[in-house]
Image (cartoon, rainbow, N blue to C red; front, side, top):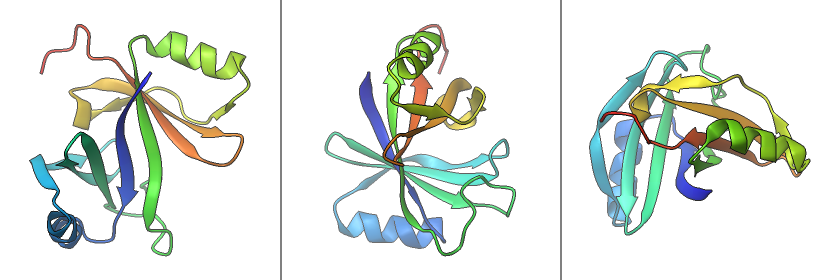
Length: 133
């Protein structure tokens, strides 16, 4: 698996974007309304690093917590998501805590979220084979 992006929860996506632009990040695409997870998303890139800004739309968002802003997760892209899930569980690295979720930000590819034994949240993203852009 390879690192795909780092997710950061923000209060105001437009203001956060301005801050990251000041650090040399460039906006990739437009703001995405994710009505599945109740978030607004925006991707920024600095060199090879892709950052996902996540603004909760309402309290139905799984990341909604006005006092818990900042780093949220590292996303790993897996060619075979089912195999990655099996390998993760088989290796005893932690616990997957969501079912497969359709991700509008990734052209409908599936994702799952997991927590490593040390409390770090990760996202596993299905590879893009066979998914049209």
